[in-house]
Image 1: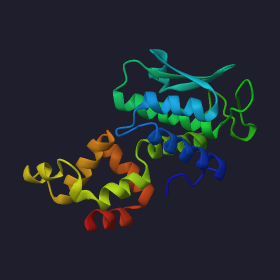
Image 2: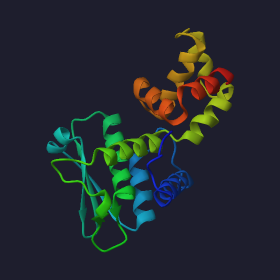
Image 3: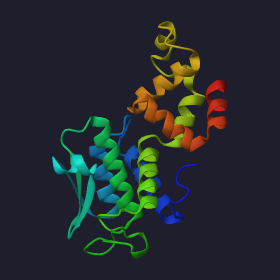
Image 4: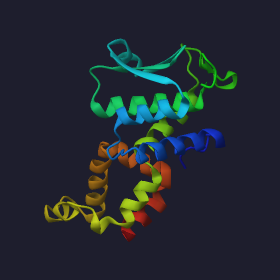
Length: 202
């Protein structure tokens, strides 16, 4: 299951962020600019996104500054990779850092040196990114109301594989996530058996 390594306080902040994002008119695929504005409001920190060459090699990173955070992403990365990187770095802001002080600092027990990153922390932030881009509650809602999703009939008319694959493909397009990544996210969130049950009953 997703977010098992996340403490209750951080999980609540992740949920608060998503509630704030959707209350402010956010939709799918997740609008990263609005998400960052929502995060700034939630944490009372300014957050700046910077696209540069170096972070392409590092796959993104976060730098705390006196007024908040800078998130670096690769300027040549695909749109999805940028969105995922930003989601991952949001995970670090909410899970790794204490952002309540004037200068954000890493929580001592989650600190990871630059050369040898804390692998457990990195995996948790990957899961947070997946959860932000593909919230479990919305996946369930779409599956339960699948027959009312616009354009779903068109997928079946085109006979793009069996209904199971057509549903997955449609949902991956709605969430703006490449199909292989989307399948990975929802399998991690639900478990394969429950996922099959949800899709087949939809």
